[in-house]
Image 1: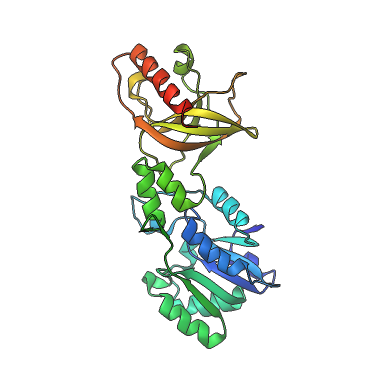
Image 2: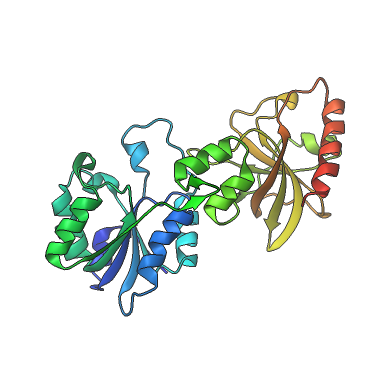
Amino acid sequence: MKVYDSIEDFAKIGYESQVALGFFDGVHLGHRAVIDEIVRDKGDRQAVVLTFRESPAVLLGKNDAVLITDNERKAELMKAAGADAVIFADFSAIKDMEAEDFIRGVLHEKLRAKKVCCGYNYRFGKNGSGDTEILEKICGEIGIEVCVKEPVFCGGRAVSSSAIRELLQSGEIVEADRMLGYAYSIGGLIGDGNHIGSTMGIPTVNLPIKAGMVVPKFGVYASRVTVDRKTYRGATNIGVHPTVGENDAPLCETFLLDYEGEALYGEYAVCEPAAFIREEKKFRSKDELTEQIKKDIDMIKAIV
């Protein structure tokens, strides 16, 4: 799959395309229904996902906007869904375009789209003036097929990025994973922490949670952690560690139940929380914390 930094970069290639429209944060089951539509009957056309480099919500000043997936993870998921290309466009460059100008100038002329697909609540154009009705009308005039996907339901609830964020922030990992269609994860380079876990006889690996990303509910989780293509059971704490001195920012800290070896600082790891065990709390002493962690580990061994 090719990744393009602008609409113009893709336009230079001159391919005819089938385009999935949206921001696709999380690339959840609803998003994949949209992508599936442009992939399965593409023929010689390119199946292209048109998204944005930065969150429109953030650029429009919504301070509570947080992301489920960064662009790197988003591209991986789109590739797995069968897309030929993803365009990370500059939202600021097109947000003030009139809806008709976006359809005719971008979709028709630059992307040479023959088919477009979006979700039922897709909005576009200046001040969000464009909707699926306008998209169908103008595309019909210029010979672009339009497919509008109705919501996908999971457990009686419509799948959406906002619903998934709420589930993660409530510690409902299993339900969030069902809506995503894959395991939610936190990935990054293992940092060199304060070594407090080692002094307690419970050495851990530390993964930072990137700024702007959704932070799951603070607490202890049963987890799986993959390092160098090997997966280990884990006891993961997400939070600020109030007993041993609060961190400035939330951290994903995991004790690997099945690992015996050298320190893993600097290695890339992916942590997949699998089940919420308990909330983070401040203990009266490190000894009390150590005893609780041992109980957590016994419980986790029965889960993962």
